[in-house]
Amino acid sequence: MSDKKISRFPVPEINDLPDDIKERILTVQEKAGFVPNVFLVLAHRPDEFRAFFAFHDALIEKESGLSKAEKEMIIVATSNDNNCQYCVVAHGAILRIRAKNPLIADQVAVNYRKADITPKQTAMLDFAMKVSIDSKSIGDADFEILRQHGFSDDDIWDIAGITAFFGLSNRMANFTSMRPNDEFFSMGRELSRAKE
Image (cartoon, rainbow, N blue to C red; front, side):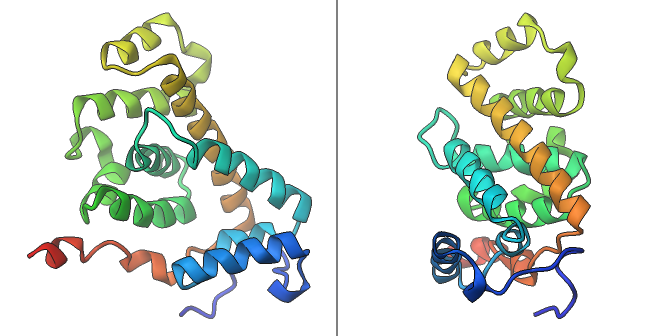
């Protein structure tokens, strides 16, 4: 476990937090076995913490035409482009677990166009990158490409929403110098051995 600072800003003690935030953090700790630093760093401003995680849950936890692994692919690819170490490491771990593939997160982060993903997923990430880098140039042709791959308009909204939300997350993580938990680095990397 690292003893390095996880934020440029003060990190509150869990027991000093409002009850709803404390309960959410302890629930995550019970499920994951540790508290992801994003919860501790953003708890510095409780109202924004609540808004952030409400929006996160609305995008990530709802039923969608995108699989949970595909949502994580979007986060990893765009977060890498935004040079967000925290989100690439944390969501890379989640992607490895959700895809049941110990290689996929590194492939998607470094160059998703060479990753072992489907043409449909490549089109999804092409669009996500356009939303992240050059949203002003999105046009009907982009929607047509996605529809040809079987994405619905709701799916397209989800791709854009996840990309935009994590653009915010990436900037907050970089601005606060949010440090990834050491636990994330090894999560999901032993999946191939477990199958043998």
